[in-house]
Length: 161
Image 1 (cartoon, rainbow, N blue to C red):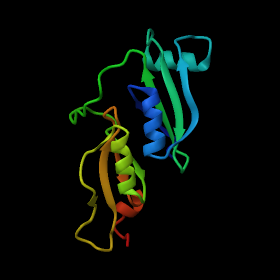
Image 2 (cartoon, rainbow, N blue to C red):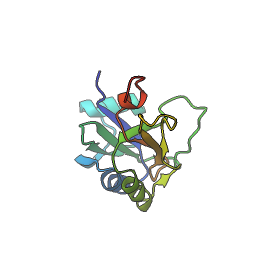
Image 3 (tube, helix red, strand yellow):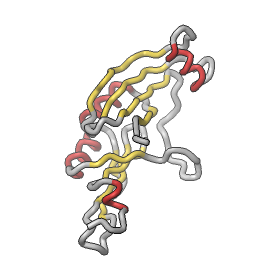
Image 4 (cartoon, one colour):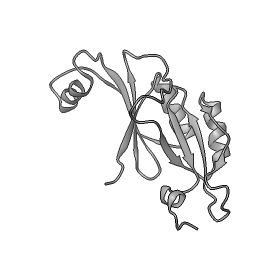
């Protein structure tokens, strides 16, 4: 299988689109669109199945990474407070993007309301033949994401040089 997209809950669609396009370089495919509860369209029926009756509607925007992976941003009308990481909770923990420009991305993330959660570190500091780096950050709504310097296979393969 190939990865197609990931959906992310955000608290302010305008701020989220600005963050994900300016800080992370994603491109807008379909900008902020209102979705209401209705049964006439396939999308309406799907949303009722996913969110339940009375979900009150939401805004959605569709973005895409440079390698074609979709990122759906959801701003629910009935939203909760900023996400706080509960490491005991099961479910998706973070997503990861790959870049050669850690410092530039980290500066943009902070300037647009996100947070750098740690110093950049080498994934295999004991092995100079494996230069892969990583860092954890969060968007302005508390959603965790990671940056990698190398592909997933390069980072973890036992024969990577």
